[in-house]
Length: 191
Image 1 (cartoon, one colour):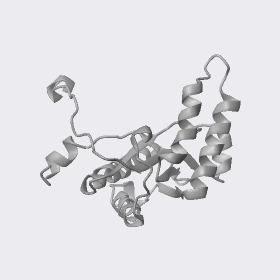
Image 2 (image 1 turned 90 degrees about the horizontal axis):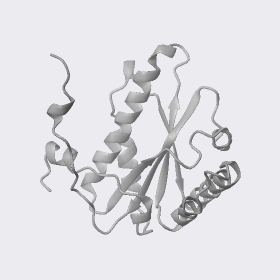
Image 3 (image 1 turned 45 degrees about the horizontal axis):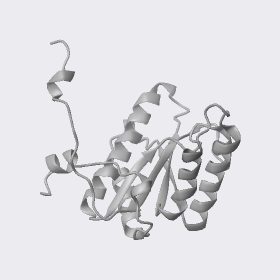
Image 4 (image 1 turned 135 degrees about the vertical axis):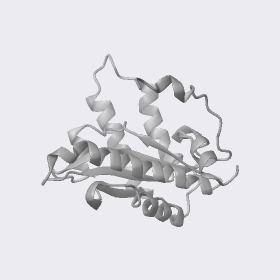
């Protein structure tokens, strides 16, 4: 891949945890991701993101909690054993997890959309940063109890914080770069 912005954007892909090798990523990769996330545009430089880094035993503990929430909180008619097993399997696949938290602006509730958009830009910066590492990949998940109050309590979040999901990181043998995209002109309206 040429190292130019068009190729980096167009070849960025999510890679799912079941594809990960289980190898542990170097800590410098995690630090680089977080540094670049911090450069995302944000309204009045309010930095609405907070992150928790999970690895090793802490990550295993979190996956156990996610499994427990899924098994005990999912109605019987919606329960899927394959999904439960997938959570368990991630213990042997995922290297690190970056927990994504929205730090709400208590002074200006009208910034909600701007803050969430800024956080999404930060996550996109992390995705794009992964392009420089041949085998490091990620996936932004909003599963694993993201919207469950039990998980909110597990991370000891206060009322001014909202869990927005997890950036799950791992090693992969070969990245995918292909994708099917519709012509951008289909999405232009009016004018």
